[in-house]
Image (tube, rainbow, N blue to C red):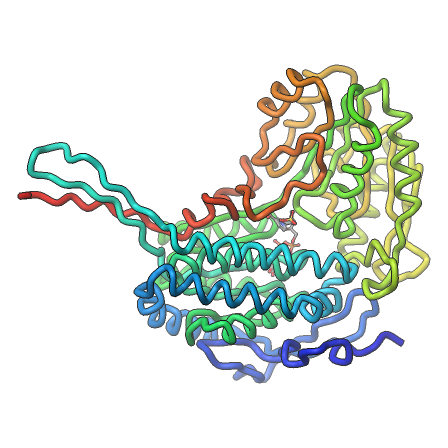
Length: 491
Ligand SMILES: NC(=O)c1ccc[n+]([C@@H]2O[C@H](COP(=O)([O-])OP(=O)(O)OC[C@H]3O[C@@H](n4cnc5c(N)ncnc54)[C@H](O)[C@@H]3O)[C@@H](O)[C@H]2O)c1
Ligand SMILES: O=C[C@H](O)CS(=O)(=O)O
């Protein structure tokens, strides 16, 4: 019998069964409605949360609007100190935060702790950036004119985030927003709100003032999203999730020309050229494809292998996949947990069935795991062609479709033949080819001879229909700032 989550925690107060609204913990929705948070490995109910609605969202927005001015008036150093304290608390509580994340999302505990430290790295990074929000002094265009450019916080920020990284996707937004003096209202995915609530608990302990941070819990997000987009006290929508929902939010934000940041869907190509280090390419493919059970926006969705090394790569990849251990994220040595839902399993099954119906072969996996539930066998397909669903749609599961190609120009054309443009990867050793391919790929991010590119120090984001804006890096504050040009005359 799996231990109860609460019994695993050192700091049991981090398991919060209440929403955070305008600085108050709300255990019961005015409607009395609740929703269950489930463990995807077991189907067990972890806890029930209040199912909040538009009225509670408005309360949070009003409080944020009032509190934000005083928060913006603090010095960057004062805001930096609060963020640094939050970073220290997240690291000190990483074991508990990881356990909460594994329980509600299913990823193996080691991976969950890794996500906590990844999320914390954004808080640390923006604790440092908080002190460096610089403007400009520009030489005047007339003798009596002096010109300065100020950078000021946008104001109240509304955030909507997905279930696959329930800590890091929020931290990647919360960090810069708080650093520059914004207020922040989080709407985490209904599947995984506990990680957001635990981080909010620590944020308050770190000194985030009352009203500056709210976490709205509800099973569905559409009504709350509509309030975010239509309430003119909200100056920015920052969204991470599917391109389909990103479109909805952008349309809803258009009436008020509301600023938006969009971190959307992906369809990453992973290209192995015949001069690649094949063992390194297999290692990179394993992490790029099967991290988080294939449920990341930057997962390799299409694997293109040059014909001269195709068979050897397929054989080596199959051997590596055979070493994966599927199971409950709390299990010893488990490398791969369940998929998040039955819908996710059915999408994986649909992509496999479509590919095999058009001639692809399953060389590993291909069906639900014997553990049952939403566990699925890590899968490799060979003989994959561009007319198959796996070529154009984000599978978001543990399926590695291997395409064969002959020449560079052809594989670049295939890699770019998608509406998405988030992450891409390739393995090659010829320096001229490396530069030419990296420049030709239409993606926001390119991994060369590596399958893991995500870090707080680099600008994370996509082009085309994978989104707009960047998260992390020295550019990460830009999306939460307004630029103001001041022209001083009569000097
Ligand atoms: N680019 C990135 O950084 C990034 C990171 C993680 C996930 N993703 C993408 O997210 C998708 C998987 O996550 P998902 O299934 O949770 O995506 P999703 O778009 O279905 O849901 C994301 C969030 O939006 C909310 N939502 C759904 N419909 C909404 C609506 N009409 N109005 C307002 N909010 C709404 C959900 O409740 C959830 O909190 C994949 O496409 C993946 O590529 C992108
Ligand atoms: O799912 C997409 C996230 O951005 C994952 S990560 O940032 O690459 O870890």
